[in-house]
Image: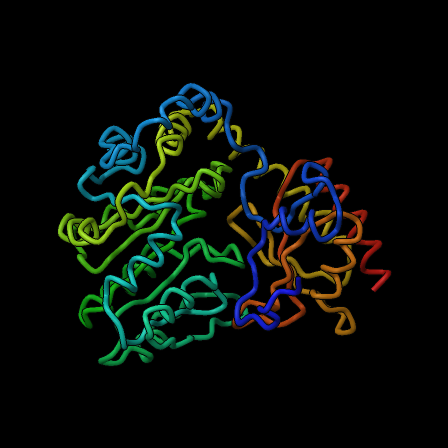
Length: 370
């Protein structure tokens, strides 16, 4: 039966290996996914062991207030308490929770390009979007955002490191934005889903400032760095007052038991953390070198585990390139669907050396074919 949803306002994200495998008749384990910006090493063995050990606990309702996990997160993040944490079914639940909490009929500001779910979350509560176009180097200009703030503005979404470019914003820049918004009674949601890929990430996180600025909300998850998108666990960090208000509207039992135990184990696995940092840094350097040899691709500098690329040959589009790559079982992220980008951009994730080398080979063939 043909789907009634022929025209979609929003397209699916990267990482839809299920739909990709189904459409192209490829076994799931044979899909080479460069579209999802998750850790190719994850999940760590300790998290998997924790899930196996806790499997029989699914006969009980989940813990409605897993204090042990909150304490673990507080220690892991640093300079916050367990009372500063609210949990979500992935960071996506928190992204949708915030606009709903703020009511309806207001304005939300999004510097673009950016994660499309910010827009959907604001539109869902019958509010309006104000896009602020980022410059070609994806730098965050606080003055431009300040000019866009009106009496109707209630929230601003910013991801740091930025997606889809991988650009990292300085702490001073984000703090300036938070201060401007604090004066205007505007909530600033800082999405730090990729912060753990950054060396010395504690020097860039906004988490320690949540009690100083009660309009600040920091979003994180175990999806990207810990390679566990399937467990659906995210957490928000804010002032105690803000957290209390959100807890009153949070869905009951939104965190499953397996996610709790897997996350606790993952955050303690220092060996996995060190291995990830070393591996991603090494393979990203190699991958950038290989990509640089392809003369018609420009690589955007990234502080994360993914790379945004611009196709310099105008006759080749990211959409057509994605289709050609798909024929070879390789999934890349067509970035033409991001507001603020055109069909000359696509994104890939850093994977193992062997997989990256295979990507380059197929990419060269696809570019010639297009």
